[in-house]
Image 1 (cartoon, rainbow, N blue to C red):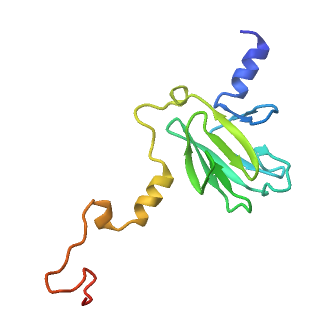
Image 2 (cartoon, rainbow, N blue to C red; image 1 turned 45 degrees about the vertical axis):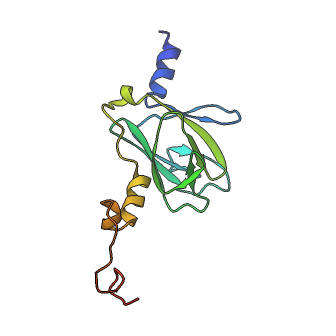
Image 3 (cartoon, helix red, strand yellow; image 1 turned 135 degrees about the vertical axis):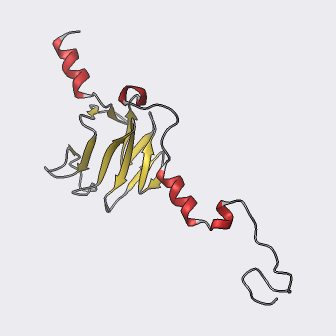
Length: 152
């Protein structure tokens, strides 16, 4: 392997964001990255619709996760709005109106077994009632009332 190949291999040790529609790939050089418009961001996207601190990428158990940092124009994963979501290999990450393919190999980053739980799934699960989560339905109380205790 040449020196240049070693540098490129190291630079993208954690994967890369490849702009959809052209442009240079953005290497993911550490396991926690701030994406934003200004200088303190690890990955600077100098577009007016990108917030100063737009989102954060974190590597957890070999998988990348993205978290919106209360940005004005939000993030999407595979065209669905998200607050915090697992980024599966080759998914589409949209930061404001800028779109990227997330390229990485979880096994090379320490992943084993099934992927960790996706936070959007957990949020939706937690919004439902315990009865719904257990797969149980409410039944009539036998007194002519509805399950909430009110009479018909």
